[in-house]
Image (tube, rainbow, N blue to C red; front, side, top):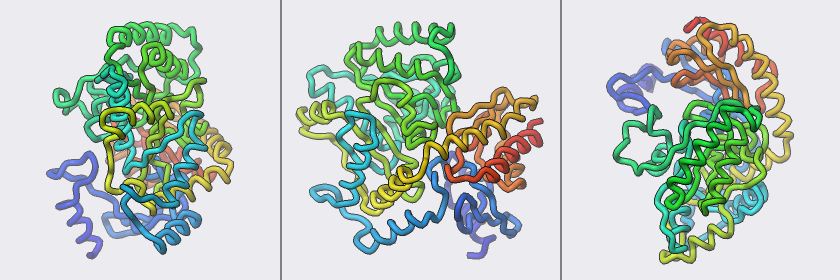
Length: 435
C-alpha cells in the first residue's frame, strides 16, 4: 500500500484503543524504531524522527532494536515459537519463573504466566477467591482505593474506580467492590500529616464494615498509573497491609506499570516493610517486545487454592508460557540486572525534575510531579490531546497525553540530552496550547 492508502484504510477499518470508529483521529505511521527514536511518516508523506517519551505505554524500558533482545528472539525462533503449556514445559518458561522468584519480594514462590497485565490481575483475583473458598470461608468482594486502574477485562475493571474513571460506563454490570477514598497526594507526607491521618481513619472504618466479605486488597503501590498518575504516601500502602492482615484478607500488588524500577526501587511496594501475598507483573517484563505477564504468589496461597474442590487454579490461557516471549523476558531481565538500572532511573528522575520545573510558572498547570522515571504535568483543564501531541512532535518528541495529564515515562536508557529535549517539548507544548 502507498502511504496514503495505508492511512486511509487504517482510518476506515482499524479500531485503535479508546477511539471512535465513526470519527477516528489520524494515526502517525511508524516506519521503524531504534534506540529511543521512532521514525514516523507525517500525513503529508514526510519522514521525521521523534524521541519516544512514552516507552510504548511504559514497556520499552531499553528502547528499540536492542541487540541482546533481538538475539534472544532469533535464537528462540530457531527452536520453537510456541507450544502449549498444558502437560508440557520448556526451559524459557522455567528459567523465567526462577528469575522472577529470585527478583520478587521474599515469600513469593509460585509463578503463573499470563498473556497480559490485565489477565494477570484476573488470575490474581481468581486465586484470592479460590483461596478463601477452599478454606471454607467464601469471600466475594475486594477492597481497593479510588483512582486506581487495573486493566480493561471485566474483573480488573471491577476494581478500577467506577466513578469518573474510564470504566464508569459499565457500572451495574460489574460486581460492586469496596472503594476507600484515594490517599492524599505526595510520597513524602509525614505519618502524622492531618490529611493522611483522616484518610487512615476513614479507611479503617470502611474496611471494618465489610471485613468478613473481603477476599483481598488490590492496589497499585505508591503510584496509580492510568487512573491519574497519582503519587501517594507509602504509609497509606502500609495501612492497607495492616487492615488485610488484621482481618484475614490477602494483599495483591499490581506492579504491572510500577515494577522493574519504574518508580526507583525494583518494586514500588519495596517502600513498605511488609510484602504482598500476590504480585502481578507485566509491561516491562519483555522490554516491550512481546506481550507477557505473570502472577506470583506465596506457597500458602498456592497450597490453599490447590486444596480446594477444583484441585487447582482455574485458568489456562492458550499462549500461557509462550517460549518466544519467555526467552525475550529472560534476556530483558539479564539486561536489567547487568546494568545499573537503579542508577539509570535516578539519573532520569533528576533530569525530569529539573526539566519539568519551569512548567510550575504556567497558568494552565496545577501540579508538576516526578517519581523515578515518571514525570507529570497536571493541567487545570482536560488536555487538548491532538494539539499537544502535534506541538510536542514539532519539537521532536512523541507523547500521548490523557485526561488532564501531559506526562512522560521514557526508556531508562534515554540520554541526558534527549531528556532535556523531552522535558522542553512537554513544557513548550503545554505553553503553546494551554498557556
